[in-house]
Amino acid sequence: MSQTVELLWFSDCPNHPAARAMLEEVIAEVAPGTPIRDIDATDPATAASVRFPGSPTIRVNGRDVDPGYVDSGDYTPRCRLYRTAAGLRGLPERTWIADALTLPRPRGWPAVPQDL
Image 1 (tube, rainbow, N blue to C red):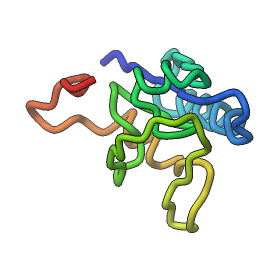
Image 2: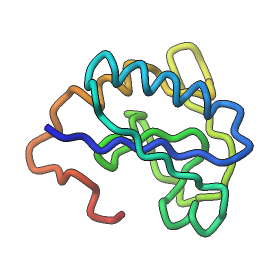
Image 3: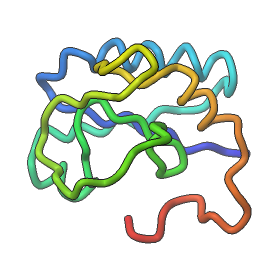
Image 4: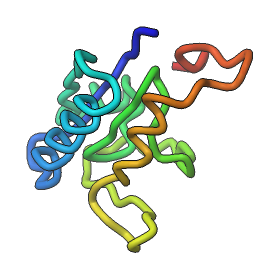
C-alpha cells in the first residue's frame, strides 16, 4: 500500500533535523522507499492552510502520528510538545511513526480526513 508521509515544520524549529532523521530511519526499517513530503509552515497563511499544530509534525496518510492528538484549531507557527512515555518532548515517539506506517486503518476510514 502506498503511503503519504508529511513532515511539517517551521524555519526556527530546533527539533526539525532530529525529526527528519528519525522519520527517515523508521521509514527505512518499516516502509523502505516511502517518500517524505516536506512542508515549510513558517508562513502563517501556509500554517493555517495545512492546519499546522506545531513543529515538528509528522502525518501519515493525512493523520497525525500522535495517537492522542486533538486539533486545537490554533495553527500559529511554533514549537510542538508531545506527551510521551518519558514526559513532554519535542519529538514524537518512534513507535507512533512505525505504527502509523504499518498498522492498518480501521475499516471505513478515508485515506485522508474529509475536513482537510
